[in-house]
Length: 397
Image (cartoon, rainbow, N blue to C red; front, side, top):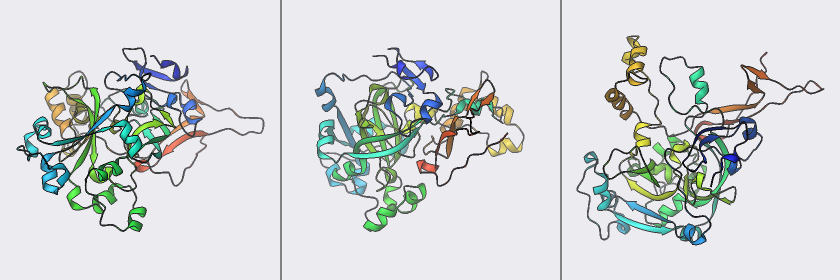
């Protein structure tokens, strides 16, 4: 059951799980950048709780895995989605009541087996980078310019990978289930040319869709939940993102044409190109259309960047503020208030990493051949996961 061995001797295992597997881990940067397409074995691992193990040696188990699709009753009624209002009554709870369980209990759910997903919907394949929000965090800590500590796992440059993902298109699944198309007013030519950017989703989608979200719900229980009934790990993205004609969100069952392994979400996970990996929920067992964003502990308390407010900076009190929300002497209530006022990270920014030359013992090791040539190797990702239009290498010495 342990698969720690997949990480070479220079990789980093930040934590091991209860079964001895690589729980939070990354490959060495030379191993990562030597592959144009990252093998599943070399994809980084990020987990908040125990890895969920389905039984891979029993074929029926995988095919019988089911996905619950829920549309909140108040959403279905407001939008007039008849398939989702039959046999339900409208939610008695407003968005401000915060009673998700009561809302779901009054809403209709459809159940789809993995075997139906595979047989009923076309198998789509998407080449996409997956990057942890904390990639290169150790360098941020080493080179920080503010007094606050850089919290979280101290990832090096390997919390990223580029792979070919296979699965069903979430857009196609939702359309087949009676969810209206936010881009139905566009011509086929306009849809084909529409870039999957924040701007296009905010300005070209139908106005009714812009306040709705799609949740991705894992079967992984959250040990950080403060609710008596508990919570699972989850995330959400805008409906206009989930159903964008060129966003390529997948309900994914394989990577590089090989079934997902347990560490990467077997048998089903979300793939959301251009978004931080925290949104790519593993062991996916539910999706939900709602007016609310997901409030699982990870989305509520993590994946946020605490920065001093403008008024604090103007008074020159950054250090005092940082100490009040981070470190040993923090004020827990103030910290939670600051965190809950911030949105969780959503999309990727521009990023890069250098595999060769390598940094070692405080310096850079450059291997020069007999012709005076040396090799540069690395990776780069564009804004929102797009390809970089131009890259440069600077030889500074």
